[in-house]
Image (tube, rainbow, N blue to C red; front, side, top):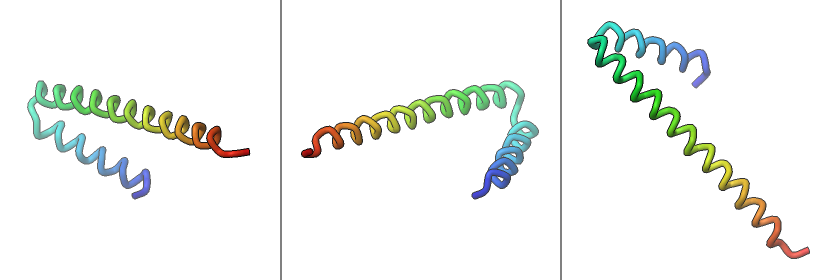
Length: 64
């Protein structure tokens, strides 16, 4: 999927939720999704750091 297609889908979903949901429900959904995305990004960052550490340990344990 190209970034422009993803952007179009996200925009369409946002507009749909905006016109379909009550204001308070829309706001709560926005807060929930924002927090969820932050947690997902944090988990991915931790996973990447663990991969880097694993690679470094493998390099150190190789015989010269």
